[in-house]
Image (cartoon, rainbow, N blue to C red; front, side):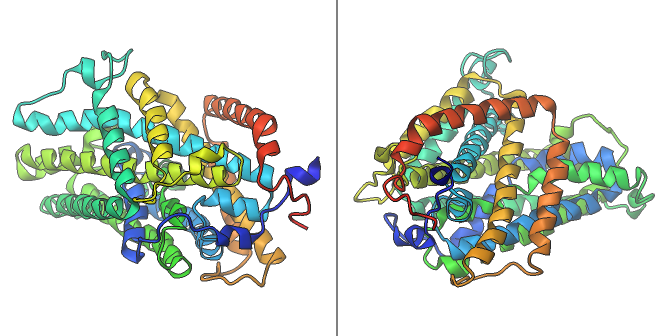
Length: 466
């Protein structure tokens, strides 16, 4: 029993599969990760984080970036060694065994599925903010879920359906659209910085540490989640033209770009407005508020709202893509029904799987106010990060002979440091989040023992992992 639970998938098996079309180059992969990271978070996170740390929130962003980088280095090594579609699920199958891989895959279903639904729910709100500049608005009955004044969240369904149609057309088409959207939303954030710098006042940075180092660490825990998404490129392992070279570049490069962008926006925002001004109010529109104040009108804020609309669309697109590729890999391994991995002969994309995932996600997005459930994505994400850091240590010891396009520096100090930081962050999550996570994982293990273990592609090869 224990042998079958922890059977390992040979790395060579993961590298042998290539049902998907290799169409994505280095730039497309880089922008996939950037598009996943830069979502609605940066448009609202400053309003929440600045009151916790004051001007020292700059250090919070650097600390959070360092914590994310530690895990990104492990992802980069495993992505260049095992460039498979399943991201951390596929890496875990090779390093720690089937049941752990199933657990990671199940965590990723929670992370990707709920985060897509949660982000899609808010798309209508940002869209309404932008449309209001033209005197238009979507009625609350059609832009809010039941319980919040609405009946059916139509914009949430529209954004999910539009992204699904793009993915069905092909990965390369989706990547081109994503690159355009990422360039546009980066341009809007740079525009905000330029506008805010016209009202820059250096005295707003004094005192720099008004709430001490505890404030810095508290804000770092808050902003850490605005860095999640750098692993998006790793889900495209089988559609990358040169995965060993390009996946590490995309994973680490996206973190570097986003960190520089976040610091630029934060410096501009702090310089344009005293950090204690309107503390705790209008947090969700802090960038729009600052931009409008700087230009003395509302047009700049409306442009920022457009940036949020584009950001959310881009995040839904990339996250939906990642969800389908992880499920594709699990179906190929037999842990989910094999029919989910059928690929269309013309587009070479899993059309049925993409449609199914879009429908499943659109239902809660249109009818449910996700609220605290969305926080469960944090545990799913951090759980996968922790396992990847363990996996890179195990694989380096077990299979030092495997060719690696990238190796984690200061091994094993940095992976161990990443695990410690993840434990610290997870320990601070709300108890209800732990309860939701426990229920989700219990359901997952019931499915594994009832179906997946018996249908596993490795079930007929008990010697696997020897």
